[in-house]
Image (tube, rainbow, N blue to C red; front, side, top):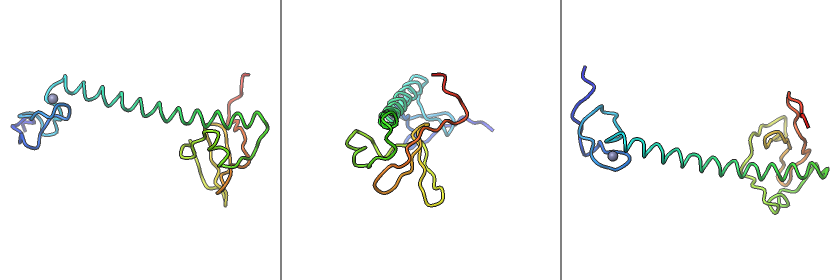
Length: 131
Ligand SMILES: [Zn+2]
């Protein structure tokens, strides 16, 4: 069976430039290698920007929790955290343990209630700190 065929120009258009793709496999998405590279490069840049923005938010959250730990603070109002710049929408894990919500920002663990983070602690996992 021949994989290449004439394509319906009205429905087969290049994802990058929008030009019709007159022939090729029915799942062909680009009119040329140039368009394919441009589209993938732009998607890659977009992905990296989004990733960097999320990591930046998580780093800020982590920094705030780490600062509280260094001060010996184990519990904080969410409203105070938000005032410090904490973004409550981003965390690295959260699961229900009994009636508690146990969440983490990387290796810092806390229990989340409606109004506060409680029992903020550093998880040691299996590795040892060298410092
Ligand atoms: Zn194109």
